[in-house]
Length: 308
Image (cartoon, rainbow, N blue to C red; front, top):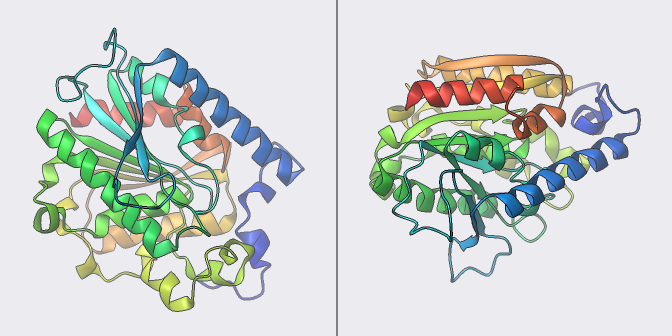
């Protein structure tokens, strides 16, 4: 995608395109407050297991998973292999690979818990403490633990990522899970890619890249939109994939979302939907998941219900 003749920093600054705030800093401040409040509420009302370490030998910070159990789990924490949720909802936070953490990312856990769905929030090291390659690897390692657990429980896993988390979720389509980890494709229930970025090359010349320090080569390799069709695991071609952007996302995000959804269709993924949600911006589109009666929440819960 071309970026000639535009202010690339502005083009990839979602906070400068919100219809709700004229001050970009206030958009981010409000977003963080909303996510933090929802997460703190979940941690005080839902049985949860925090800081499930992915790799005890790793020195990376925040390389852990937080688990939030369904509302029918009562008393002290259950034996982790004895619960029977309807599904596992995995969330990968955004923040341009350099901001946010698990501590602000369980705002949807109460909604999922009420629907008897377990929430797994993946924490990962952020730049400059990790490179983009290392971050992608950490997400893969975390999902292995979740998928292996899901196979023991015989339940499906639904993966949701927002913004940079949408990018990270999409990289999971590039792994042959059966060959590499002996994980069956049937365990994947669906992917929700919310306001994601799938071509990292335009970011190389922006403020976003300062802590990441990506070269063009690295950015291209970590761009799902630039990966060959043979890099994708064809066993997932029937899995539902929702590529969703907000009306008040930057136009570049509209373009990338549509291009990526179209690319997946072109290479044989036959259950892809490209959706624009009107009257939302880059931030409140994902904040909807805190409440049951919101369009995005309904869309996701309906797909989960129809897939299990």
